[in-house]
Length: 262
Length: 216
Image 1 (cartoon, one colour):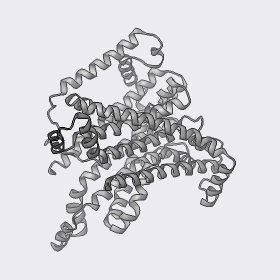
Image 2 (cartoon, chains in turn red, cyan; image 1 turned 180 degrees about the vertical axis):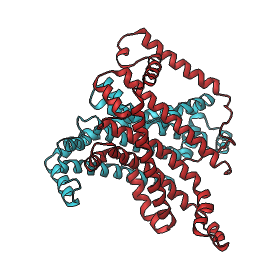
Image 3 (cartoon, each protein chain N blue to C red; image 1 turned 90 degrees about the horizontal axis):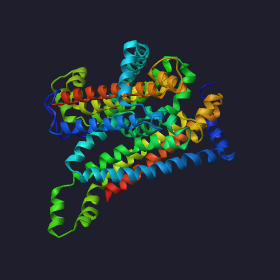
């Protein structure tokens, strides 16, 4: 889990001095892309131009064809993510609270984190069927490991003295969790929550892609089967915009929650 | 029907090895892993060093690499499958993109974070650029660089194995797909077991190497 050295004070920090250079690079690369497609040739077969993609996104949203798919995927990610948080934080607190359990389970969980979870999808499909339940479980399985590991890493780092001090002041156990544990583990926990959310989104979409009747992943595979590449780009661009903005929001919240840390 | 007993899975794995199916499939997977890792390493190292050399410009470009890092690359795979065809090429493409980003970021971070004192000492001893790079910068940055390579390898492995499952043509991932497709749970579980063993084994070996490097 990454460490951050500089912490801005507010959520909406001022852009740094490189902002124009960044925007310039983006503009130039988009222009080159547009130019390559305008020039025509073989590349138009596999790559639509940026303007076409923007137009496609507008058409998809204004005609409303994409909305039910977004809704279903959102529902799957939401339920899967809630499950992942519940189990992840719960087990994480239990495992992280006891030195022995942490030492036993952390290597196992790290190893499980690196397994490509999509490989387990056939088993999930056989258990839950091809409805949305299988996508919810795939999203939850994708999301749970970073959350679990973040909680464990966090509660391992809680200073025992703080807990003793709280106990000597007659704090109840829920007070200890709320006032001592939570502030201490908030940084690693939130890193886990952020990574877990983007993994849960990936899990749900990949699950839909493989076997589904509705959802954003299904939409991509539908356009793939009809070989309409520009529409595939439209849906994928939309997904990427969603994931990036979710990630950015989570990162800002993370900075804001931990602004008192050095 | 759905959950198999471990003993049955074990014998299934064993049978696949005896019949030679395991080796013919694993050869493709191994080939993909080797090619992807070679490309990932060369590309990641050179781009990382390039970004470090570019100083401020590298900082700007780094933020783009970071953005790419949080984009789920695996979602691009239908595009690669359509434009490169079903086969080994899209697998390697996705795996390389997934693996190369942490290596670039960590090499740049590792080289940038080397304490300036080391560099000043080396310069005061009249070391030339080449000597500074190989004798001072590289050893000082090795732990960070290696953890980047480890992450890159793990991501690349995930890329290869899941792509084989998603674009079924051959390899161990195909075993899982085929087992699901014809509802042959023994094959399915055997494939899953091989893949889990490979990823856990790779992680274990990398962790051992990392420990050795940290000790040195």
